[in-house]
Length: 160
Image (cartoon, rainbow, N blue to C red; front, side, top):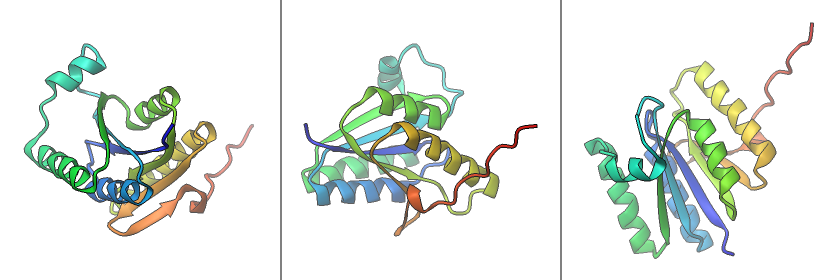
């Protein structure tokens, strides 16, 4: 089974630079690319299938998605697209638990996001890493990639 590159995108705060990094990584590895786009938790859905059929992406998101599809076609990369709705990191963790063969998880977090939001995403990614055997790559801005192993450990909880 060919290893895959998963790029997870939070559509509340899209990070197109992370998507394009994932495309380049898949091209270098000659691996299929899985793009998982997660709508904020407020989107109502009947099922994941009906969400994929009924979703109406805003124009900006539709444009970058079309660019991803075009770039994958040019690079001859097999592309799978999954749409989901709910808390971002919970959806990513569920996806990873139910899909085998993912070698790399690429996630984008804007560098200018509030510190508490970045720390929360770092901690959530570390929890995912406990159950995901592959490599997690965090893309904070164009050309700035951090391996999860390079992040500082979150403070330990104190017991009273």
